[in-house]
Every structure is written in structure tokens, then in C-alpha cells.
Image 1 (tube, rainbow, N blue to C red):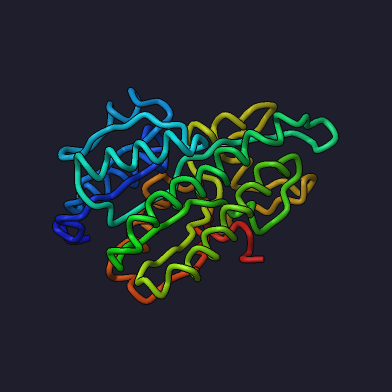
Image 2: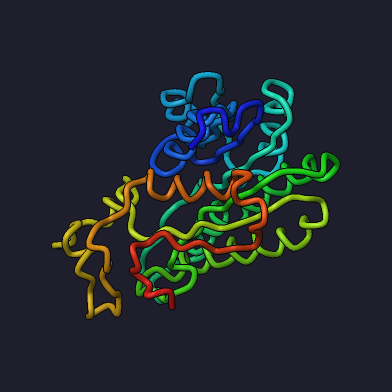
Length: 255
């Protein structure tokens, strides 16, 4: 990546306090972007905010808070040219054991959060006739996963929303794409490692839960996913929109 590839551009990254979001923010900054690092945990975002950027605390499920933060970013850093929707939460559990709140929470963040932030930013991009948006979804949005119905459904909603948004915004020169990671070495992933589950067992897969292993034989690093995100945000991807790029080492066999 050219060190000046994103020079002069403002990039808003949600979920920037850790994991994939932090990696996306760092890579965009390395390319010269001024990064608005947005996270529910503002201190976490501030701890890793790249030089030339600023940290903002925000609950992406709160549309008023989102509108206020987007306005602040535009006032303090300049017009937002790039948006990476990375904020997300994990939800596990069998459907019969899931209560209403457990079902709603992943939708609030993973789907509604993508909607609120994308809407706020798109409203500003449309008059300017330019921009790029990438949503970090999940390979679980396209392949059923046992004990992950709420999470998978929320990511599927975010994926289809982003594609529909891309169709609406294409006439305005704005591209919208999805990056769908598989197992990635983040705190969220490690939070599922219990009862004998570890990196090696994830790579091998679990026939008992109808989950394939990872053909490439490794779990992704956050930077692996971030590389795909920043590519789709770049001018190198200027003729790509409404695409869903799986970054999962072949785990879904692209089913």
C-alpha cells in the first residue's frame, strides 16, 4: 500500500478500540488517512488512535448519538470519505434458550448499528458524489452455525442492508461492500475457547456441529481482514460494489 494512498481523506472506523477495527484504523492511518476512531469504549479507541486521528465514544445503536458523532467528525477532521463498519458483538446459545433481550442485542449493534452509521455518513456523501463504505460481516451470515442463530441472522441482515445501500448509492458514485471474516484471533474469538475448544480445534473443525475446518490451516490475524477492508475502500477497488468478500481461509468452502 502506498503511504499516501489515503492522504487528505477522512476515514470513520467503528469498533476501532480493538481487534479488526483497530487494525483497520491503523492501516488506513498508515496510508495517510485522518482516522476517526469510534468505539463504545472511548478510552480503548483513544489508546490506539493513530497519529492525526481522534477518538470518539459512541453507541452505534443510538441514532442520535451517531448523528452527533458524525457531525463532530466532519467539523473536527473534515468531510468523511471512507467508512468502515466494524463494531460488532457476539451472541451464542441455542434458539430455544434465547430470550428476547439476547436476540435483540446483536441486532442492535450488528445490524441497526450498521444502518445508523451508514445512513448518517451516506447523507453527507451523496451531495459530494463520492465515497466508499465497507461493512465487516461474517461468514456465518452465509452458512448456518449451531448455537449462533442470533449472531448469524444479525450479520446476514447487515450484509443485505449494505448491498441494498450500494445499489441506492451507486448513481452517486458511492461504493458499498462487505468483508466476511471467518475465525479471527480477537478477544471475541478467544472468548469462545472453553470446554476443550482452542485454536487447533477451530482449525480442525467440528463434524458434530457441522462446522468445517480451515483449509489454509490457520486462524486469521486482524490484519488479514483489515487488508481486505482497506483494499475495498481504496481507489484500487473503484469498480467493485455490492460485493461480499470472504476472508476465512476457505472455511465455508464458499457455500
